[in-house]
Structures are given as structure tokens and as C-alpha cells.
Length: 79
Image 1 (cartoon, rainbow, N blue to C red):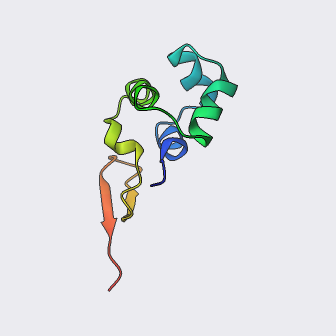
Image 2: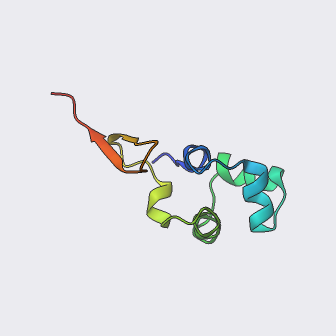
């Protein structure tokens, strides 16, 4: 299951550096977590810092876009 951390960082208009600072860890440490196999505890800390539910960090496999004006998630279905 793919993680959406980088996507959420971009959606929130922040950066890996800013997120790492908010979490109290280095950018390199955060990058290792993002690109590796982070523990549940680390995922919870990332979700808290991004102000999202931890489930939002995971790619559900659905095609969706987020409205840039209101932030609503729009699911796309190809028939």
C-alpha cells in the first residue's frame, strides 16, 4: 500500500523541511521515514503534524483529485 505523505505535503502547501521541523526531527530523518517503512508511531506523528487522520496517509487505490478552491475530494470513475 502506497503512502501519500509527499502528496499531502504538497496539498497543504508546506515542505518536507517545515514538516520535519514541526515534528522535531531532521529533514533527512523524515525523508528516511517517508521513503522507508515507517512505524505506526511515526505515521501517527506525521499525521498529527499534517493535521490529517492517519488513514489519509494511505493510498486507497481510488482515483481522486482535490478541488484547489474548496479542498473537497472528488472521486473519478472511468466507465
